[in-house]
Amino acid sequence: MRTTFIVARRELGGYFATPVASVFIVIFLVLQGALTFNLGNFFGRGLADLNPFFTFIPWVFLLLVPAITMRLWAEERRLGTIELLLSLPITNAQAVVGKFLAAWAFCAIALALTFPFVITVNYLGRPDNGVIATGYVGALLVAGCFLSVGAALAAVTKNQVIAFVLGVAVCFLFAVSSYPLVTDFLSRNAPVLAEVARRISVAERYQGFTRGVVSLRDLIFFASFIGFWLFLNAVIVEHRKAD
Picture 1 (cartoon, rainbow, N blue to C red):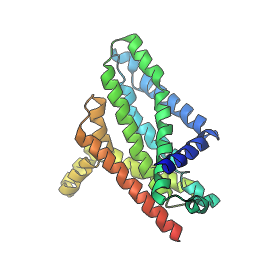
Picture 2: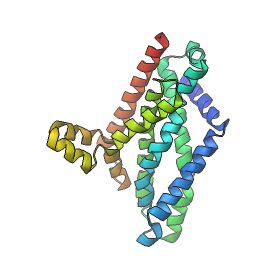
Picture 3: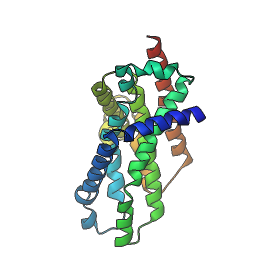
Picture 4: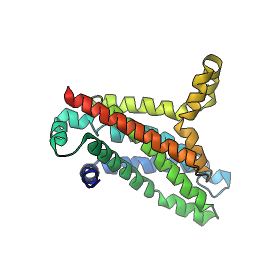
């Protein structure tokens, strides 16, 4: 674990050594503010809660998280530094988990910087802060899912644009797989796939957290989802190293 955290610290420092961190955080905060208070009709609803904030956050992550992950492995492959990294006395798993933890910590920092939103709703009324807390936990888990997917796909190519497009496309599938438009279509043509789509939907599992419900089943789903994609990431890195 010590080696994994060394990799994570190196990667996290890399974010803040370039304008990437500032640009991502500013865009994230501006988008969430605009969507929550304007498109989400925050003041017109007359309710002191963060439901609009949590409603939009998976879609903001859908666009921004692949922008983080596209450089995790694609940049290493383009610059040729992946050989140097993997020649160090660390395993593929340690490198994969370290990079993932760094990206996840970065998303956690971005989420933490939205604390003025929490202060605002508490100033305007008496919200259920327990629900807000579970909503943040759910948002962080959604970020973890999208990060694990994006990181695995970024290991496939050295082109960051391709890594970004692949990340957005696959994460989008997991985000909308439980929507009626998708499930109704699958129910008519492939009922088994409709049930599978509901079960693998990240957005569907996230909804419970926004209502203040934290179930063991959902926690196991998120842990399994992230674990699967990290395992796949390690397999891809190993395969690409052998090329």
